Image (cartoon, rainbow, N blue to C red):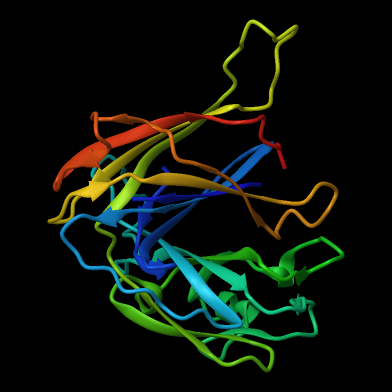
Length: 273
C-alpha cells in the first residue's frame, strides 16, 4: 500500500478537508495483489486557503463514494430505497508516541462499534483494526492509516454528520458530503526502459484522471507519495517522495470548472503490498 498527496483525493468521489493550508482530497485504490492509497490536494484557484493548526491525532482527510442506483441494472425484488455511501477516514498521528489501535482499544462511530453497526444493518462491511489480521495495530508517530466502512442506511449517506472516538482520545467530528471533484480513473503501470533486463510487475508510473464538477478551476501543483515501511505494518503509511514535475493535461495543469483533466508521473518502483 502507498499514498500520494497532490497539491493543487470505480476510484471515487473526493470530499475536501484542509491540510497544511490546502484543500486535501483523498482516495483509496485497491485491487488484488496491489494496494495503493492516493491522497490528492487540489488548489481551488479562486478560493482563499486558511491553514489549520495540527493536533495530536486528527482526521486529515475524508474520501466519500456516494451510493446510487444504476439505470442499467434490473432487480429481482425492489431494492432498498435508502442511499448510503462508502467512506474512508484518513487518521494521522502527530503525537511523539505510537497510537494503539489494538482490539482492546475501542474505536466507535457515533458511540457504536463496527460490529454493532453491522448487526443493526447500518453498515454492509468495514475495514478497521477490529478485523485486521496484523499483529501490530499501532499507529507510529507521523504516520497515517485508513478506516473504511460501506454504509447500508441513509443514516450514513451524504449530508450527515458523525463522530469518531478512539479509546480515551478526544472525539473527532466528520461530515459525509457530496463531493464536487473526484478521481475518475487511476492507473498504475510498469513502463519498460532500456535498462530493464526483464519484465517487471512493479509499477513505476501513475496516471490520474480528475473530474471537476465544482464551480471553480483546480490547479494541479505537486504529488507526494506515502509508503509503508519495509517488512512493517502496511496499514501505517509515512510521507515519502514529493513530485513537483507532472505531465499534466490539459497543459498548465488547470482542471476547468465542470471539466476534466489529469496528469501522469514517473516514479520509483512501488511496492505491491
